[in-house]
Length: 144
Image (tube, rainbow, N blue to C red; front, side, top):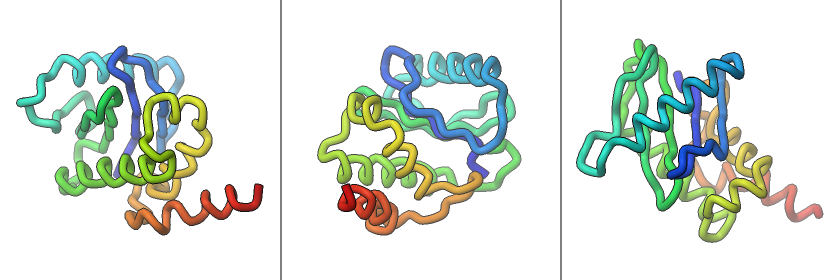
């Protein structure tokens, strides 16, 4: 089960945080700060999977953003498929925003959350089809 998805820049600032279970704000900031330091300190030749606290962490860097998935440590999941999920989310954001960048996420946070919500529901992968995930937000945009 996916516990959280974070989009963090190279300076360690969280740009999007999507949690599926309640975690207090104090615990979130501590968790995000420690995770960001841990992921930023790793080099490109190190594995993109690590265990941290009670989470299994899967992360991937795209340009200036790190996409970090946190899973329950006891979950027996396919890490490579979740790495592919991160890639799919990035490609979908890229298709919607036409070359997505950090500023697109910052200034259209509700749309980024909406797209992530189309992929994930209660910690489970709802749909991985880009066209299906983009059709509701495209329909909303066409009504404006």
